[in-house]
Image (cartoon, rainbow, N blue to C red; front, side, top):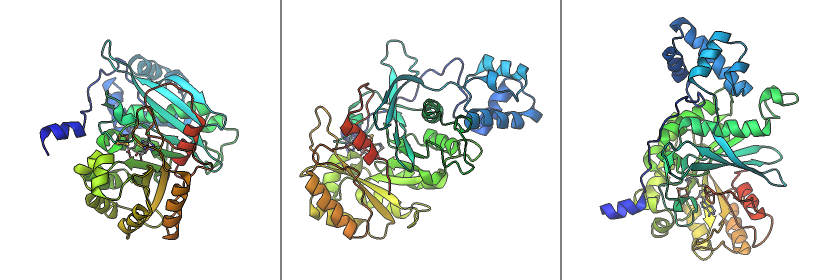
Length: 402
Ligand code: SAH
Ligand code: SF4
């Protein structure tokens, strides 16, 4: 590939931004917390215990200031407040739809004067048996999938682990989802509101591997927020070298944005395919640690009218996935201003779905109505507008229910 073609394929993520004078402790590992404690002179013999206390106050109780951490000495609380915060990203806007779906627009530090604010969105989708939180991993995205709104955003930067965990903190704050805030917290946590997480907001999580890994390890820690890794799904457009790593180092469920079953078409829809073609993506799926019939890999497939929605495509899809413990998530395309595609007709989505269902795959399309039921995610862009009915349907379609 020529350099120019490579540049068109991937914008460069801006890694640097100015760290806050008083950084937040949200998102740090226990070891990092202990380092921070060392930095402010906490004696070695106390660091482990203090880090444990902080962990509990931050991730079990959800407190937002050191003053409330009453098991920690007043003196240390004062010292902590002098150097750190437990701040979350700033909530710029919150939209709550009639069905309870919530969307938050969050502002992150940019640090550079005059620069457009760095903003990401985070969405909560309640259902009867679960509540799914859709998190962003980057501001914008370096990839340019042809059907995705996020990919058109120029400004790109990786989120820190703190900013990823911060989205969970904001959601739990706004929902009142800290154990002590729930009327009667059940032992098994079954009345929790945030029960599942999907890394399906803005950005390509496997291009921000370390921060995503660190954040998900914090969120799944048993002594804190305690979300099971089986309830966390990471979606990737196919960054092959990091797929198996994700299984090994994070151990969460995997979703692949497949969208096409032939390289010629996938090269256009998901340009990263030119670097990591279908064969390599599918091999990485076969090698994914922990994949089994009980832990299937989800294949996301956006339904684009006349582009990838024929029965031949469905047949080839079934053939390609042979031998991989898989489920298929059909996503009605969600158009955006200037997008070049249309959503498949509802009848066609049903035919497609039926074919793969008959071939033995679960293939939820979670959209009850006809043509106007188009879809979803990937639509996230740093903009404040009300959630439309269509968007809500779309977001629910993304909630990955079996
Ligand atoms: N970057 C990651 C995760 C975020 S996108 C990825 O691509 O997997 C989450 C899902 O929404 C992906 O499957 C993506 O392909 C899909 N998507 C993007 N734009 C869409 C659109 N306009 N309509 C429907 N789905 C879309
Ligand atoms: Fe990026 Fe995913 Fe959108 Fe592709 S679909 S541009 S990888 S966010």
